[in-house]
Length: 194
Image (cartoon, rainbow, N blue to C red; front, side):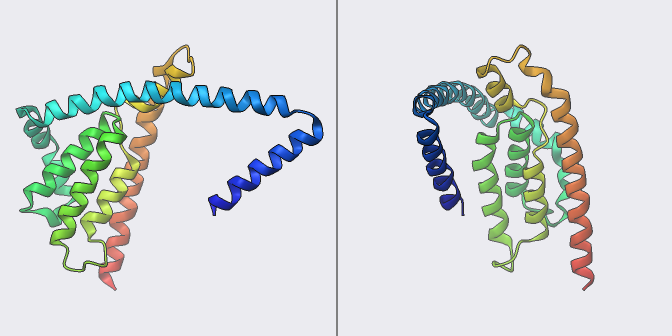
């Protein structure tokens, strides 16, 4: 659907610019947007490299096992189906840690690994298990302590105080995660009762 809507917007914009004599403004806007996109990409690249590198260091040290143990009680409550699946629990922990640090780009491959591991044990291959459903909700809500991507965007756009959004992000992601998990648990319970 978007591959239809965007070309329509672009064509209408060009036609309007030609009819109103603002073709130069469109040209200026295109070149400025390209320049801004390159600058933003470079900012993101640096941020992603830094945090992805830190995650690799954390994975290869005892810090990951300590963080996994710290999250273990939460994972037991949220994912009771994964009693003996340490690999899935570890992958879920790494994904949660990456999300908490605001590393959405580093969290994605970790989340995919966790989903694959849970799918391997899933008896109904064409249906999400309860743990998979909870994991999707938790990953989507993405509880964050340090929203690095948003801070990087705000920095690249010249924000006077790019970290000002940290507390609102904490509140928003905590509320989203809590509501999402409660709603999912209720839905899972109702589906089981049927």
